[in-house]
Image (tube, chains in turn green, brown, yellow, blue):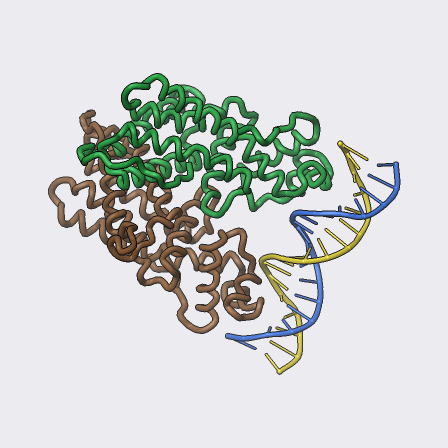
Length: 229
Length: 229
DNA sequence: GTCTATAAAGTGATAGAC
DNA sequence: GTCTATCACTTTATAGAC
């Protein structure tokens, strides 16, 4: 899977950091190469020298986050499937495997929590239009695996129903990331706000009851539609 | 509430139509005044003559739909509250009052169904950044009323829990609009896809079970936080 | 690799003729 | 109200000196 190498050195790294901060803050279209080079304290030509174009930089900024998130999602799902090899894995664990990596990689980031969530939310929102090709290829790996897992965990839910419910869940997840101004307390309620862990468990519970609702219909085949999560 | 008049005549209308089509298609930031005037077959100065600025046009494009949607949402909520004056209104009816006007006004539009939803989705997504002031003022009218109604309908749900659940629901709603390429069949399953009515009822049911989950905690006060729906 | 200077095209807005 | 021409500015990208 690792097709894109993330640089570490000097001004290339500085540009990447500056770009992601600005993208998270103002949106992908509202940031110019000049804004980025100015914050990174390089010259304007540096972006084109290092990344070929503004789009090349944009792709790398997105990939730097979605690559580890994607890998962790799939790793967690595999671990769950190994653990429950016999029957169906618990729904809550699958949802957790989908959502947690999204918020967990924040701590490894140098972005502030606020900007990190905003950036991730933007990556997903952008999906509607068309992401840079390499980013799109990366993101495509997750849906098929998770959809299958949800289908196995909820064998009695009609497959078309299930697809829609997954969509509703994904929407809630994206909204959570985008409007993270509520998800901003580093620890449990120090200043009154809930911790990330509390919010995560709220989301998982909310999604689980919605997905599981009225699990009584006859078994159908596993859904095949594509999602953008 | 009606502070903005939507014009009907000649080139002003043509510009509005062209702009909304392009905004829905490519996003608000990716469309230039020249793109709009070119599609509307007017000259470049027309936008500034009729709307003062590009932003003025953007506001009107958004208002043209959100104004009637907002009015209908509030009217439906009031009707429900009159109908169930004594006790709490059923949760499903409140959700319906919130979501249905968003999809119902489509038929009055000249935009294709697909573009209409995309435009609405974009309006909500934009929220994270900052909408034009008049649009923001308009949208602010809905949340307080509906949050109160949800609180009354679910008096036993902890108010902080409820706020989060509403957020998750709103996320699903926005996602539904944005990725409406699934919500595209005018009538019931003629070509295999579900009708809007089917999808709506799926969404309402999904949201209702999530909102209502474990309604057993003691009564708290009605939540006050602001939402962006 | 880093930088300045600049090319080439695009942006929103406006003055002024009709 | 409509239009052309144009202003002042910004955009991405690149050539070429160091």
